[in-house]
Image 1 (cartoon, rainbow, N blue to C red):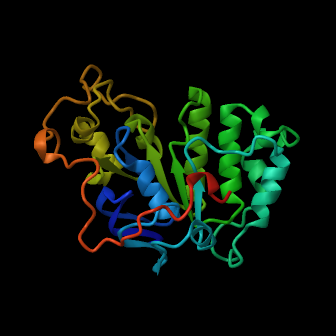
Image 2: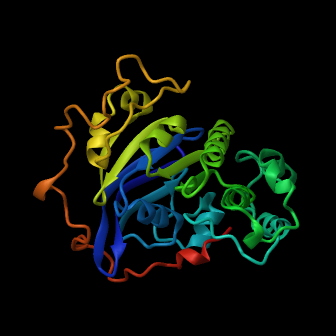
Length: 300
């Protein structure tokens, strides 16, 4: 097991956003985390990446507890982050971004997974090779996303966190990003993918977890979700066309069945059963609740 989160509570200004989160991502696997806006997905990513100090709980990579460590130490331990919004430097060229990221590679990177080099990431993401002299603010949204992924890979991560990498991209570019994610898992990385759209998550993930009001309310294999997506869609409160299989075909008999239909009694939704978004922190929470670093200071 590569990434393990256990009993994690986290939040802001004394309020708890994440409640008792347990999550594991094995090497070579993609674990998708889906949920509506405000469910706490980015908060969980920030807590794992060291951008937010948890109140309590474990965040470990290969058995090494990183909870509460600052972001640069978490990155050195092998956790890479592709943040929401991409956050490239507007005045640095693509070549400068890649050179800077390569200089921050982990000291113990050799022998612990793929050894990413600048030529290697340019082969994986050939569009960047055509844009080496372009500044960050001259790139399209899709090119910026590719640059954010390349930048993270050059730090030699073993665990890669991607916070809604397809957000705001044209469909063909978002599909290309998902292809890259599949390839990274095949290369041995543990991938935690934050995704708002279930139909996109099932294209690449091995497991699906649903976060709602700061609690994990569902977790199962992607195959199980494909067979019965109703419990997940009940939490997401989105009805639509049936989820296609990996070939892109809609399973027979589901062509006109809304995903949200069917029973979801096992999923805690609605009414007073849902916790408040900002509940009181756990009794033994640390008195210091400020983030250890601003999200804008994330290491490439």
